Amino acid sequence: MTTSEDRRQRRHHPEFRIGEPLWGAEERSRLRSLVDQVSAVLTAVDDAGRDTAGEPAEPALSESDLAAAATAFWRARKKLVGVEDRVAKQAGRYLSASQEALDAAGVRIQDHDGIPFDSGLALEALLFQDEPGLTSERVVETVRPSIYLAGRRIQMGQVIVGCPVAPGTTAEEADAGHH
Image 1 (cartoon, rainbow, N blue to C red):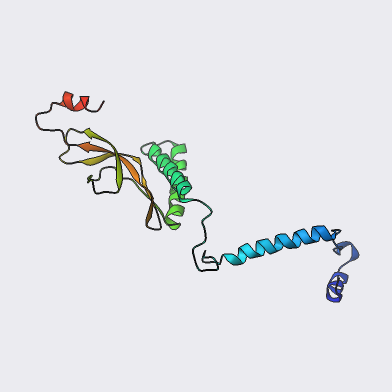
Image 2: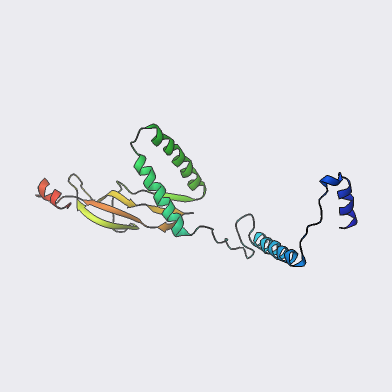
């Protein structure tokens, strides 16, 4: 111990003094190496999430993992729509808090139900089906939502598109087109 460390230790009763660690040279060297590694990582990424070159640091979660988690979140919210029991309401509150956290992190989940469909949209149409009562093509079901991270799409939505029934087609013929 140095003199100042020795003096600090002597201010306390002997039973509260911290003894010298019983580590050998090998353990101290390994500890020093680990501390240097941690310090290098901590200084490589600043508080703004940028590395020393000013580039955004690599996220801990890949975009595909984030998209999969956001899709699972979206499906859970859809399952609770219309359910009125106490447990569903509590789960809904948790999901709302999760939605706020995702919004704050720049993650946006876009459901496409009911929007007019155009082939120029960045959507993957899985199925086109006749839908009586429609006058133009519309998304009748979102199978997988579009996911955006900081305004950039990381997952393309998948949808089922409803098409107007051709004039002169009976309801039975339109229903037969669903199967």
